[in-house]
Image 1 (cartoon, one colour):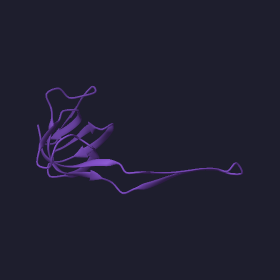
Image 2: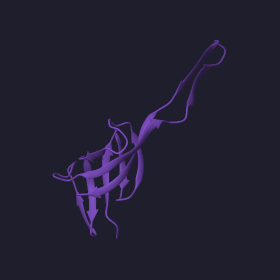
Image 3: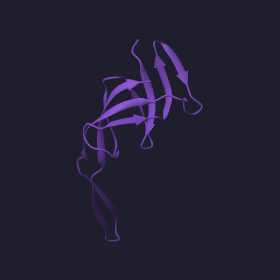
Image 4: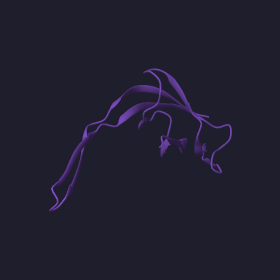
Length: 104
């Protein structure tokens, strides 16, 4: 079986394995920087699962920043019938692409 971990970053949880490319909420740093994600909720190494309550002590996931940017624009439109109420807004969410290198 392959090794994997469940990490928490940006208020969301992700299941990651070494070599995975994931898109997370924006993190500080430039392309090529190494980031250590230390909020590991669960990990499985060599078929042995370890669970944290809520986090596993002395466990981390190492990742490299591939790129950063802003996602496609979404349109937020509020409308109430018969009251002439209309509001149109747009939003572009910033993101960071990470390549997982190691689970330790």
